[in-house]
Image (cartoon, rainbow, N blue to C red; front, top):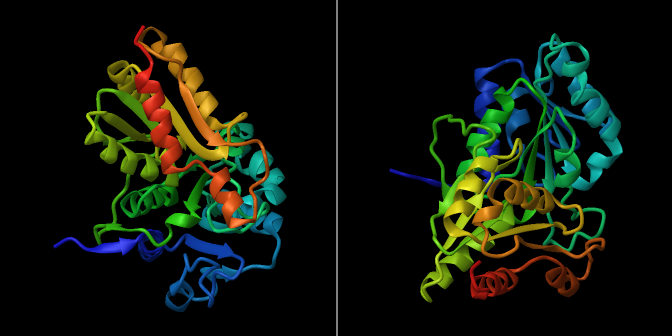
Length: 329
């Protein structure tokens, strides 16, 4: 009989099972011990595994990532938590110049099985320093793998894969999805990194999204199906490496595509997806690649302004209607 658990419980279960199976796995971060983390991602783990394997750290993102890099390079499998994605900027030297490059600079002899976990995305009125989507920054760094699950099932399978991966990974948990319920097997399982999911097949237009946006797109696709607009929805799940092949295959079938994300539009990852589509499937396009994203501004604190700032289901629906209405080539 299937069971449903939340997105954050799926994360916690993946960590708990891997810690039970492998003594080299440990966790470190601010308030993740007795408190269980600001979003309760690590709830109960210190009580089960002790203070030496679930470590409360000082408020120093540089120290947390530095600890993780050193521990990974010397044979452990650390999971280090940065409360909010915005705060990775404080530790960018350790992430960009140490974790990402160590294997390369030592000719492959160094292994860095480090998992960095963090909370990203807006929608909680957490203001400009606690609401950003910075995936484009980290996807630009060779040596890092970047993962953004959109549902509980993917969260558990992808987090398990991150912990077992021998290269540094960054797991971005969307804060608005933490309570999302979904069917998740009790036993451990992995979803391969770099493998997209086709959440819904369609023939009229492809929508590529990640995090919360892919769920918004899926709901819109179900609504538009009643009107005869057939939308295919692709969730990359892993943003680096990106499963371009699945996206291109879809675009060759539908001939129209929209990319949607919460990050600002200028320089966003949607631009990279659009560029790869025009390189690989230009002759199949019946309309320019559409991009739907946030304006070039910090995330507002005001709930009303933030709701206007973030792409919505209505925005996605209108973008789909507009691109489908364009005459074919």
